[in-house]
Image (cartoon, rainbow, N blue to C red; front, top):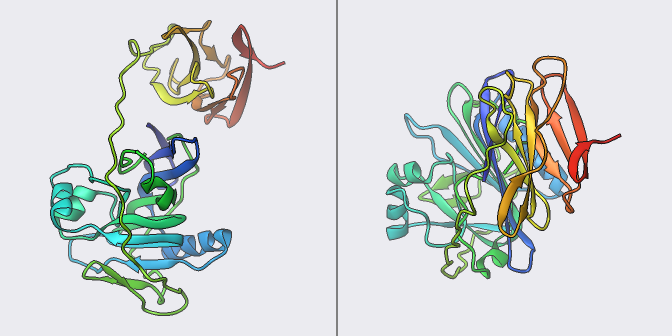
Length: 327
């Protein structure tokens, strides 16, 4: 998992991404979570319609019942994804901060434990392949945003752990605010069950689909933590990371190195040991490049691209034993 910080005209926010593969390498789950999100009037409905146009079908929308002291919430799904309410002992365990026993959970406010404790609906993603969108928003428009693509059927057939609430690298912010009514045709949540209200949105039937217990994956740290040499000041190494396809090359961004010109460090693995390759990769000259905001590495580990946010640019490096600027 990685976490990225960014800033809009509203304020700073954090973004998490995650991706999960089946045993055959097929991607079964991709997730983006932003907190906080800032919603403008009518932006919730507009954002859902924008995704509907891209996906090419109408969504199934569920709106959380309004409760004093709590944010408003909206869920939307497309494709064959269905929302299976989590109830009973499993919901109680979520309220205690424990992970779900199976499947991928989703709620309105981006906090499963709080939802369970306060009696708000928490669902498991069932059915088949599709997309799910979830947002919360208070009177000032501050809230959360989550968007995921998932093949729930393929996921349930794998021996995979339930993914975390949010989870990998940065994406452009979605600028939100709320309090405003979404659209008149939303479905409302009653007793935890989605029900149809009417046009302009069409609602699909929600059915329960069994999902087997999922085994937890076990990871062991390989060697000490990676801290690149030559850093100046608090470089925030690890702000962005990328791996080659074989997992033997890594690039690590340090957005605020040298206050804050920014830099990146390259590592390779041999016989299970990670070692830094050459000196840090850094811009020269102007202040506030913030190089290392995001990084990417080619499958063979021989080409890297590094973005900077201070002046808006990207740097390409190629490997010649060590990575060097592309000519």
